[in-house]
Image 1 (cartoon, rainbow, N blue to C red):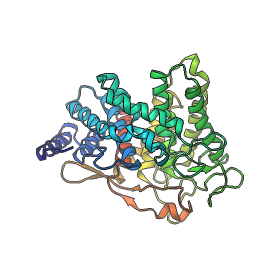
Image 2 (image 1 turned 180 degrees about the horizontal axis):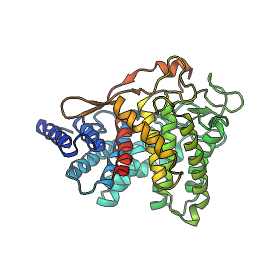
Image 3 (image 1 turned 90 degrees about the vertical axis):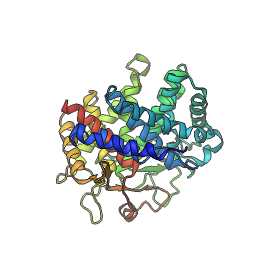
Image 4 (image 1 turned 30 degrees about the vertical axis):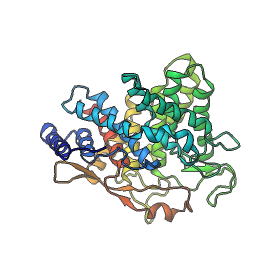
Length: 396
């Protein structure tokens, strides 16, 4: 979509107002207006899986901001960008039934905002798009146990996909297929349970990146099929999936067993994340189960995701407030001081985010720590914006 040059100037001006308005302290608004100035989350090409994930994650962060700041001076700007982002995905996701075998579960990340906009506008193009996404789940290949493949790699399931799958599966079923309990809660919880069973290390309580149910991958554990290392961002996606899905599941008898399962997992994982935090920095390593190993480093996107999950989970009463809140506050402050960049043009930048790490690799230690770093990665900036929103609630 063509955007007049003057519109970008206006966006930069609005972003500059955040500095004066918040005196550099309300980082959620500052980062989100900075993302808008970069046109983040808007598909401009064919819309590959990475672009779809970025769009959906941007929409989620912006929607959270609107829910928290409905009367803010930036509300219209941010609501407009959500719609622009969602609209840019319609054509791609409406074709999900055709392209499903070549598209990872990340394609579902835009589903909830398609539903929200449909509910508000009754624009049928949104319905067509999210219906296609929902039906594509039924076509997704599954392993012999019934676990969804994350992508085209036979029998491989990743933690990453749950952040897109579980919240969309849940919201769609609650609104449009309420009688279909085989989908939600049954299948949704089953997908999480399979990952928990295959990927969790009982000694640490942490989950590795994914598993191969056939045990044929070069990295697969002979007994469990699990990959060898705990990659921070994949576990970040999983922790966000748990807290976000818990919030969407109504607290009724229908969902009592599902909520109980997800709550147990979230509490167990949150306690493990508190134990795994680096005592020096207060944040989390790129590979969580290899602290201080040569080449390992504190990574910004996973750290922001864990911060969000702990703060939101504690605020909603899913996990004990302490020590989760204290750990998350310390991590947030480290992130602000070490990864947030004042770019000098009234916008914020974000550093320290690793590029995509795939199990379509050796999945070796060296692979994970040698992947390139990205500046202003949407996966990092959107994660930071959401962590900031939770932090700002504490400051009220």
